[in-house]
Length: 282
Image (cartoon, rainbow, N blue to C red):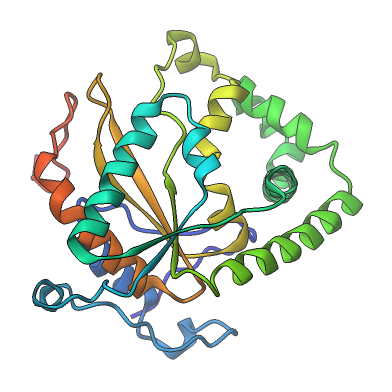
């Protein structure tokens, strides 16, 4: 069986979206593939996925060290998001005795800049053949604005972004000497309302985009394994997620932690107002 791998840039990744941690593991295992030709040049150790059914009778997370950068929990649009994440972490510590350790994430502005330059440059490079063929007029206005911004980046900007990327990776690897995972709210706000005008012509709303992207940048830029797990809802019934980031090749650890978070939080899952059962035949 062939595996799946994105090849259109260094920040483009492929990952499963599933209703449970166990389902995510099944899809992830299929994505890895069984064919020798699917193995990438880094040749990582064979994937080690946790056996969740065995975790219930043991304290598999008792020695887990959880890294938390408090300013990230304070830098949200509404405290509902951070409060729900704090509740989930408190329950995790209570149930399993995990140790919470305060960490410091340096150069946040530089990290966001490196991410923007990297993803923008690679996006433009990927779309350039279509843009040169005149297909750019089919893009929405917000996408055209983004393309115009990306054209302002130079080759030197891209190289500088990669230097920053390497430095920030060093910072994170130093943090992972002290903790096993780093936790953040998945987003800085719950799902925003989409104005009717955006359905036709798109929307450029940088402040909102900033809140939605704020905490996913590190894992995306550095290629670290990460997972988002639902931990509750805001007062309008919109879901709130907790993000768990691990060190390279530590998928088993973040999956085990996500499963532990899912058990107490999963009981309150709600079906959205607009729901489509994709597994049911029409």
